[in-house]
Image 1 (cartoon, helix red, strand yellow):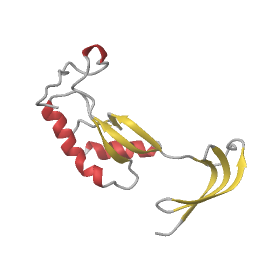
Image 2 (cartoon, helix red, strand yellow; image 1 turned 180 degrees about the vertical axis):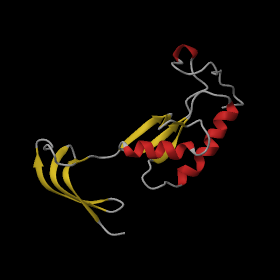
Image 3 (spheres, rainbow, N blue to C red; image 1 turned 90 degrees about the horizontal axis):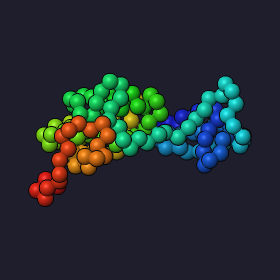
Length: 147
């Protein structure tokens, strides 16, 4: 893969650098001068975001059918999220297992212009009823056989 170049104001190491970044699959170098802030009209280059709690995006939900994750990953990538934890909702055991099964292929591969799936955040169904927030009434006590 050949190296690519991008110029602008780069946030790196807590400093703004007006200059050039050279990269391929990883950043090779950043060169330029330190500035106090980005200048108007200059492209701003930022690190990608990692979202550790994603239920859905772009009208798709992690608990939906298999193809929903592709839409979620492409939507988030457009807004700077480079990787994420897909978060399930409190649901029946078979629904959670289906969501896990449907997400599995995305853990090993990533489409172009999509966020990377780092793993799955199982949110529920073992939630304290006093702290349930927006979760549906499908919470339950954990049992030794289920956990």
